[in-house]
Image (cartoon, rainbow, N blue to C red; front, side, top):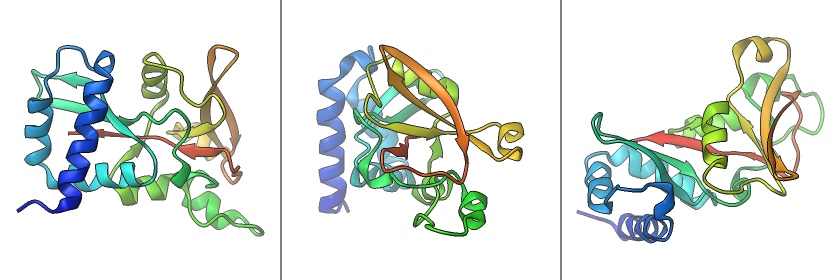
Length: 181
């Protein structure tokens, strides 16, 4: 039995899918919906992505493997996921003015993972994202071990990946996630 939230989410996803066919050429919505109907946990994650302003859409698919990748396609870093330090260790290390959560922990609670650097670049190849904001991205262990974390944005017509202390947080920095279904 489908709830109204389930129906509303599928309609929002279909509307976005139909409006942005350049992100997923050659893919039919019926195939996407069939995959989603078989994976209730994916619907919960997509609902969390949608509810926090992520505007999830399909950006990659491998029909041979039967895998479809959803990603946050909001023009700016999702508004419901900003002002967060990078991970729980960074949050625990802050002594003053702690944010309410970390990007890695919130992504995990949603059932998704932060975009990798390669995924962030792949998303940026499909449009212009994070022109006024920035997004934390998955950080290699060697960088994180030294106290840093990576984030990306688009400025001056180019995509940049930078580093910052993992404990930092800014009102204009959030995170984007990927979900393979």
